[in-house]
Image (cartoon, rainbow, N blue to C red):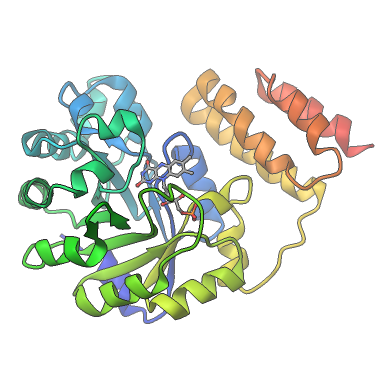
Length: 327
Ligand SMILES: Cc1cc2nc3c(=O)[nH]c(=O)nc-3n(C[C@H](O)[C@H](O)[C@H](O)COP(=O)(O)O)c2cc1C
């Protein structure tokens, strides 16, 4: 099986990844980020416990389309057997066909979440909580690698309790993990605050696979700083993509896109049309938060937000965009 990660590294220039984000990186948003230059896109995290039953809801959440490649599905959980089953389920289009889900394309890579701080996930000993248990973490990774021909990657934090990224990587140094994404913050920092560049750099020198640095990138300057200080092969962008899927283009082409109201909301509308196409009414309701993000920075942002949180259809969105384009 092709290891697209190694191909990216061999291009000898940094690459740019859409970080996995629950409730955000669905098929429509991934497609927008791909269109504006993301080199790799990640799914929202999916529960291996839920995938035991191959439910429609989870498979719908993981669906992609043929152009959205390379696409990595991220899994969370703590039971190695469930990982084995989950990999099988998501790698077989028949799992989706059973639910009449169209546009289900199998992923190009499988990722395991070792960084999620959410209590619901920690309670299952998954995400960051799992990374504290080195023995079980190792077992989960090993079983996943042995269950698939796809490249397996992991996403870890700079530090979780007693375990820092180096200790975590040392524990799995003999396993065939193709890529590690390091969110350069500790568990207690959650999703904000300074990023430990030095630790990522040490991990870069230690780990033989591809290293992706993550945390705090919001523009070309912060992206260059993260790359320069961490020496990573690529970077992943999370929160700075909210309402700005074009950030990849901005950073890669070193162009500050001066996006005016019309440009921003043309893009937002295209995003909404994709959400409608893939998810119907649920997609439109979920667009409310994205539209509020697109509104950020415009003079009428608070009025726009007040209207966007009530939209029910594409035509509602069009009416609001039109109404505010003339004030
Ligand atoms: C709303 C939200 C959802 C997230 N969901 C996930 C997830 O499903 N899996 C994961 O590994 N990280 C998740 N993260 C963490 C991001 O992938 C990323 O590591 C974090 O936001 C730091 O990057 P940033 O500073 O560029 O935002 C989430 C972050 C946010 C803000």
